[in-house]
Image (cartoon, rainbow, N blue to C red):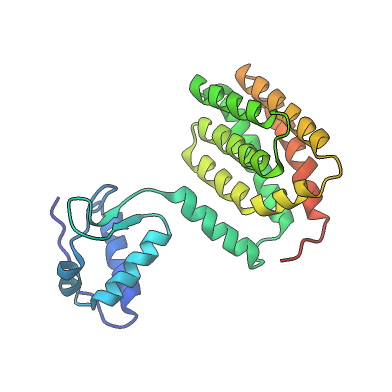
Length: 243
């Protein structure tokens, strides 16, 4: 695909480079999978230094729309990609840590997203996704499962159901919100008095949620996942967690 590049102004150079690349994405001239010209070619065409170009490319890589492979060969260079999940999760975790959103905001966002995703999954989830969710539930039920492993499997379970709902944006947002509170949920689980009993209770809800989704009982699954989230995540809202 031929892309016509134009020089950009020198003030706030890396932002202008970003704007130039964004404009080509918006215009459909650059799509996922397309490669950018090598730095030595693209920088002079844009009329900027290679350091300014690299700064712009690093920003694009951080927000999950570009991947850069150093070195030589067919895979080297910068390529446009679609990888929003990790990028949004990273940004949300940072803003959460900086106090941009409080725990109550995150709690209510999780509830809205997961009610929607569980209800939709009850009508759209592929059987292979539900089989994978079953394996995660079994993993959480393993005797002696540790808090960290349980928390990881728990996160994967909720994100998988969101993915199986058929709504890619809901899946991405659910993943970002759930990941943003993963450390706090881990600390809460580590602080419970009777971890084995807590694990059994939480996983009993996971198993019931999965059954409701398999049986197409979306409204009931939505109600239960709200109860499930408020049960643990809701306790975080009332407790002082320091940095």
